[in-house]
Image (tube, rainbow over all chains, first blue to last red; front, side, top):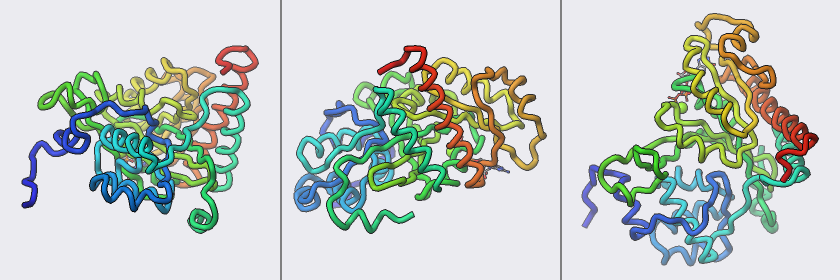
Length: 120
Length: 204
Ligand SMILES: Nc1nc2c(ncn2[C@@H]2O[C@H](COP(=O)(O)OP(=O)(O)OP(=O)(O)O)[C@@H](O)[C@H]2O)c(=O)[nH]1
Ligand SMILES: [Mg+2]
């Protein structure tokens, strides 16, 4: 049986995919990137359709939370919950957003971004 | 740019850092065009479901049926190295979605506020927003073909932009021009960080 089209669209999906839980395990920044762990795609087959799709997307290439939400067409908050779950289950590795503290760390990052832009 | 080959070969880098720059501005000023001019991917759109009161992003549980709205943000990506990715986020244009901006600017390197000289007054609200946030920003005047030509100083005066905020004229469609804007944002962020460091404030 195919699912009937729900006119409320995305608004009902948060319940369906996350079983009513809307609190993400971790507050993952939208630009933080995720990489699939070696067995992720295999294991995610049993973790549900959306988690499987996320694992497949993160397998060849690091993807930000924003990219995962956009490519799966899931609302950002839903993608964040699923991704946090997958990090907790060791399906994904969470990488860090830019440092927000420490003069040297921040200057180093800005310097790298600057030279990256100049090389574009 | 091709890092794809190194992605597969060998071990992935142990830590991939991602940074973001925010492209802000009112409705239709050219934010998506600017993101697309330098992004290695077609700009993507992500949607956030939120309550119309702005109480919580994606917190549909509190308002299951009414009062939720979907806000779209577009963004692009520049893979700078195997272990460094820059994302460019365009803000949602409509002013009623400004609470979304707070999530967008959190942790950002800096922002560019795009201004359309045909509708200068639309820029007041975005400029006010950044004047009241602790994030380095500059003003980028998008020179639309049919728009009246102003000198940079005329725009600065008309919009009461403080002298410490850099102002750049740009064309959001052109890669080199957008590069210059982004370089300006990062240079300004560095100068701001150095100044704060020397004053002993904002030291983390
Ligand atoms: N002539 C000219 N047209 C531009 C320029 N930048 C954007 N445009 C055009 O202006 C229109 C709006 O540009 P968008 O990039 O969609 O603007 P936006 O700020 O993303 O708009 P919203 O997301 O709806 O707020 C498009 O038709 C662009 O092609 C520019 O520098 N010069
Ligand atoms: Mg747009």
